[in-house]
Image (cartoon, rainbow, N blue to C red; front, side, top):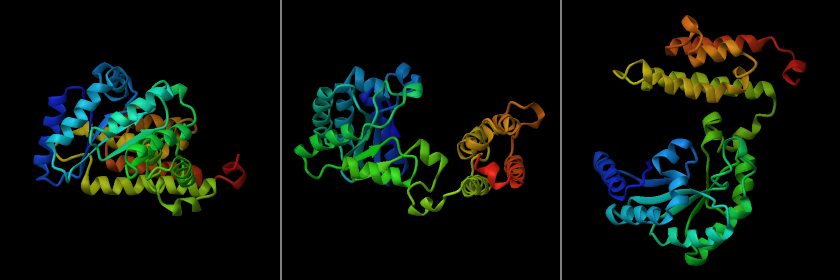
Length: 282
């Protein structure tokens, strides 16, 4: 479970509450020290807390490690600082808090939204080298810039990380970490894969949720968000009416139920069914 916050006692209390509510089956608590969104700036957490008060971050991690059982992992996810000197100072302090592992997003706080560039694999590698001088077995996970399975392999090889983490790409392509995903080579195959993801997700929603029973229609926004991730390549600009229906901005035609969501996916499939090979490859 990932937590975010700047108050030491509050974060620890939240972690202990989760531990108790899960009957001690909690695998681990991760502290979000990498969120670059404005809500994190306003709330003084994520990457903003790390840049403003890295000592406070270390205090939170030490407190989590002290108060949680040893079998419950404590970890942190960070972004790269702008300067290598800061990185050389920061990594040892984080390792010395007693955390079990560290995840590093290979971009800085400033490299966000329109300023996103290539991930700095060399600087992730530098961070890993610094950590392993303190503890040769200390695990570091790499994150950022992975759009497909080969990207994952390349980043693991270039950084020496023990594992890779994905967020945005995984939401669009849930089989990202499977080597079989490399078998998708044509635009038609990619389209079928994405619509299959959407249909399977809706099948799960119909039996497991969301929407959650008794929560009300507001939880359908979760479904909308996932469908946008799966299908954005095909509805964002090429099918604006479907985009607006999914977004809930198309009046009475907006989708509000699982069955309407299925109809939208079927409509999308019908529109692409008649495309020629030349049109697919245009």
